[in-house]
Image (cartoon, rainbow, N blue to C red):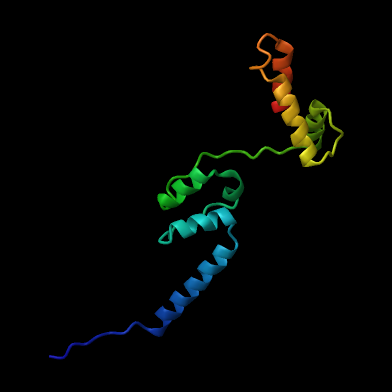
Length: 136
């Protein structure tokens, strides 16, 4: 008796190579955090997380998703949309003109937070209220 060995057809090899190309194309469209977790879990072969995962999911959420092969998904969170009116209110609370640069906002925020912190002003309700307004 002679032993017959079968070779896989060329179609099989073509489909494998095209799958690899598809994977590379999908990976190119992913954000840097998702790509980092794909590098940590090289054997992952499930569905990719939704596009909003890059912005909304925490690092722990991404880790759990890839660790569980896509079964553990975080609860849906709505991304807060900041309107121009909200921005103007934030600037007003900090005492800055609308459109102030980020370093100026950080500096004023830190100064006011230290000045009105409840631990430093335990007897003043006004300071507590002002602190809450600043930290919103």
